[in-house]
Length: 453
Image 1 (tube, rainbow, N blue to C red):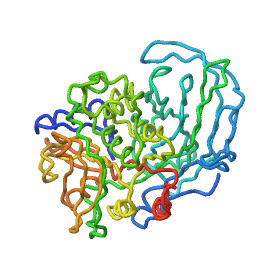
Image 2: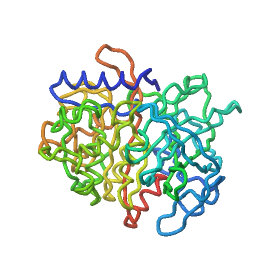
Image 3: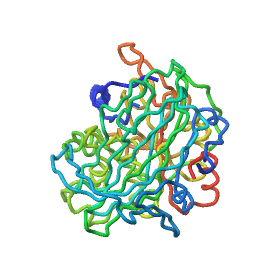
């Protein structure tokens, strides 16, 4: 599938299209131990999920100064730093010294020789700590990629500015903000295996440590397609997910991606965080101007903001934000069909989906976008999609019902035409899935069937 040369170009196009429609939508990204891979028949040949999160997982990796911590929610922490390094924050110019330790996953051979890989992680980074996530893969021609940085991340923005890294390429693949992508999928070259490396940093001379609870990736090879097969309705259920409009926040905190008109991703993330009974405290929200409505949406925008991408639509950064709340898991993945999405809804798990479409392609939306996130909360008796669409004029207007056939094609396709007739990319079923660490047995079964738990 195609990838843009600039993620800011995608965002600008999305905002321009939405502005012309009288509303706003923001762009998200343009898009060993036994493997936990998707067993869904529709997705089995397209997507491979692998996540490390158990005590055994952490002990199976190559540790240099880290150790596994057992307990109800196992994790990885700094034990004895292996050295120190200087880091100059590219967004503040501030330089500092940091102690560090590393953990490298076993090599994971993907069940899907992949054209794209997206990493995601769940971690706690107290003040004075941060983490870096890297990926190195092996191509089907027997050569290796360099170590690609998939993110330098902290939950707050005081020690470092969380950031993706531009201009990473080896002539065969490129990292587009948060997505590893082969440059020429038509060549037949694929990524057949990969490792992930975590570097945990802390202020020198302290006993501070980040705690990483989950690290993993979704590898996929979704074929180029303008349309996907239609599915038959299978679930009738609507989940009681809070409703928030990004457009309530137009012009607020423009330092975070020009304000609420571009906050579809954090607004969607906040809806699901609150669905699971979590959210920021009054102390967390003390920085928000007291006269603003729904201050938690402003908070989500600040704490998902990618200072390199200059936006709030970094997919793994949104998942990592959701997982900063107590006992929450969060991943970025792809689903293979609307059937898989129905399984999650039937189990009580809402899903945030990423899609692009022209005005008129999605009846009732009233806008077009080059990239937009919305929250799927259910299905009608006719199989139509019930979504909390943050690109709405008010919270009361957020609930929408979209025609099943239109919506599934827009979400799952990898190719589309823009308003000028040029071929552009689609997300191919990208979504965020958030759930508590103690899900109900029925929820755990569905998550496991999709390779997520």
